[in-house]
Image (cartoon, rainbow, N blue to C red; front, side, top):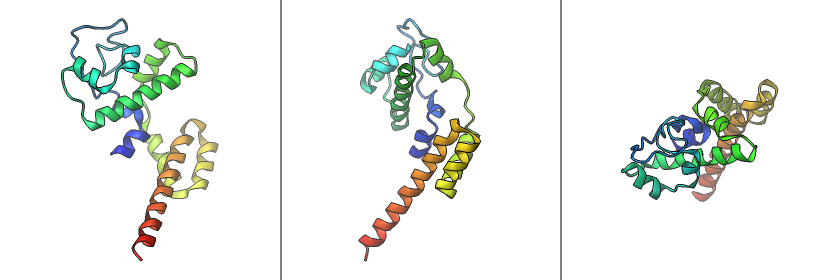
Length: 149
């Protein structure tokens, strides 16, 4: 489940439903965050968000908030405006292609990454994530085999 959250960060965009007691300036623009602006999301930690929403965040929600903050900060570094960031966060993602490229990188390794780069540079990172997952499993298996001799 955690791997899925890191591979498909926008799959967790609607995990918090805050109570709209004090809406912010950009309130109502981001799916799942009707009472929070982009600045609120970037600067709030989980404890402050807990106070605003009135409930404790689950582990999945905390991880999703961390990933969402990273996406917003990355978009701001690229020079995107707040409205462009909101549009990017609200647009649906094609998780089917992301899954296919992840499996491609996982099964074929470096060849899968090369195929992904040729096919679609925008989805090549998912092939890389699949390759990293494969390497992680191999390292864990080797460690286990060497440790239990």
